[in-house]
Amino acid sequence: MEDTAPLWWKDSLSLLGLFQGILIWLLMVYFLNLEVAWISFSCGGLIGFFLWLTALGYQKPLVAKMTLLGIFLNAILSLFSAYLAFN
Image (tube, rainbow, N blue to C red; front, side, top):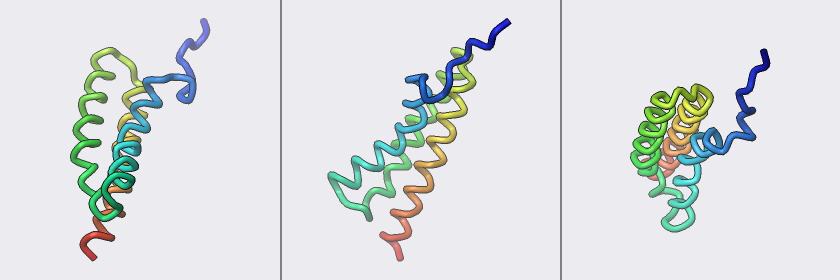
């Protein structure tokens, strides 16, 4: 029996979960500025949370893992922006 799970870089939903928070942060940096982009965590975190719940509901563990990683990366980028804004 073969494992039919797609590789993460070939799965569009996994890529969406991974990059959604990063893209929100990048758009905020581009259209606003780097110091204001710390607020992107509230958007990216909330969207990521619901993507994660949806992935769990549809039993897509790879998408759920990539979404959690995307939320984590968004948190790191937001902390960097917050450091620049409040320091």
